[in-house]
Length: 257
Image (cartoon, rainbow, N blue to C red; front, side):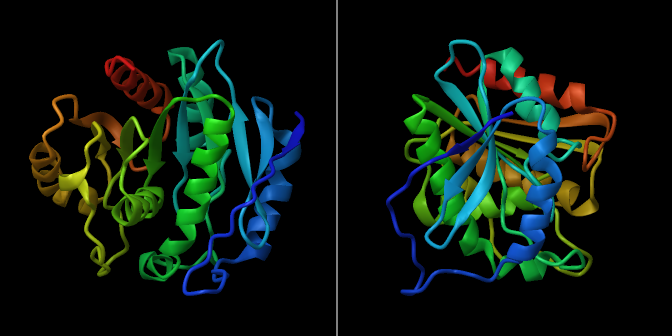
C-alpha cells in the first residue's frame, strides 16, 4: 500500500468561511485505524480548503470508468459491510473505484444531526470527482449507501448531475425513529440513469418511501433506471455482499458506458 498526495488549488467556502462542523478527531482515528491495513488499492489524500481527507483508489485493468463510493453514517471508506466489497468487487466488472471518507460526528449522532453537515459533503464529492478525472476516468458513477445517499443527493440538488454517468443508491431514505426526511431527493430532475437498490429486510422508512422514489425516477424518464429489491438482505447487506456487488456491477454493465 502506498500513500499518494494529490495537489488541488481550489478553495471551497460556504458563506465566506470554511465549514468545520465535522468531528475531525474521530475522522483521524478512523483513518489511523485503516490506513496501514488496506490490502487492495492505494490510500490517497484528497484536498479540502482547510485540510486533506482520506480516499482509497483501486484500479481495474485498462479502464477509464470509475465509481465514487460514498459510505454510510459514521463509517469509513474501507468499511467491511457494503463499502469494501463494492470498492474491490466492482473491479471485476471493469470499474475503477474511489471510496472517500465522508464527514462524521459523534457515535451517538442521529439523522437530524447529520443534516446540519450535509454541506460538508459537497467539497468532498467535488474533490473525489476531480481526482478521478485527473486519473483519466471519463465515465464516473456515484455509488452511495444509507446516509451517503442523503449526502450525495444533497450534492446533486445543489450542483446537478452534469459530468456524471450514473447513480446507484443503496438503502435510500434511511433515517432515525421519528426523524422523517427533511430534504427530498431530487430524483425527478436527474438526467442520468438511477439504480434504487435495497434489501427485503431493510429499514421501514426505506420500504415506505420506495413507491414515491420510483415515481420520481420514472418522472425523470431515463429508460435504464431501475428499482431493485434483494431477498434476504438487510440495510447493510450482511452476508449478501456478493449479491450486492453482482447486482450493481451488472446494472452498470448494462448501461453500455
